[in-house]
Length: 409
Image (cartoon, rainbow, N blue to C red; front, side, top):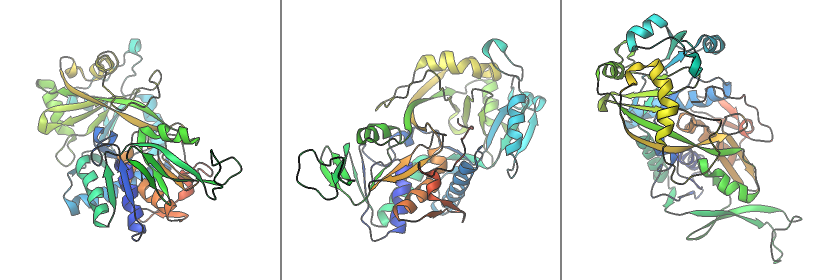
């Protein structure tokens, strides 16, 4: 198993759970579990999606996290997502609300409760606000503790891990070598037999690749298209040091289980996660056109992206942010599935690829890990935590059966 992020750890845990007699080894180039892009998440989850596939994956995973939080004492809060919708967005989303618990707020209520400016700005292309929609089955989770849960459970079952091991390439070898230079040749049946690392070769009967945004580095060299590419995503920490933001960070009118919800603003989906204990907000936005697909080992946040990209949108709808200082920032990589923003799980030549969560890896990690473990185990269907099942091939490439996801943040 290559990769000890949240999806890699979930996959390793479920492989070991289904195959207790198999030796399962996880390797990662960093110094411990979950230290890559998993550690750069804002730690939010939801089960509200456009596609049935993501609803299934997220719904099952969220239920698992809720139950685990009670058993293992993980800090999980069902504080909700508050989607601020334009008239066009509201018309589009109404068709997907069936089966969801939600509460609607009109513009006057939003103005009163969080000082929201509901007017549009044609110069910036910002639409007016129609309403707010609170989805309560969503919230925040301690990502570090969730990583530790999967990792420790994996070790207790006899799993192994090695850190600080950089994988240089996947080993491709002939199943029946002839001793010829340059094997395997095109007429030979080949398989991925393990990995070449900076500390030597590691051979395996099955090689699982779950490296997130670094997927193209290994898969392109192998000559296998996984349809997953990396894009930088940035988070800015904004202080809540004055009146309007102090009210917003507490957001008393929206409290779900005593905690304010995450806000998603219209059109460009600038998001705001209040952090009341520290008097801070985590603010971000997923830019697309003009942001290159690029693997960066140490991505850095860009001050101008906040100042000229996020801030004009943020301060239009939430004027209280106009004078709020940026007190910190970080950046990571989204592993984006370029086909449909859905996870990808497939096997080729004894190599299993798992990735493409498109920014919602934590949200769907448990279910995706179960699908990948079922593929490893030779099962046609994966049994998810909530008892529902999913065809393993639905997330594959050859017989893929998913809908394109449009609610990507």
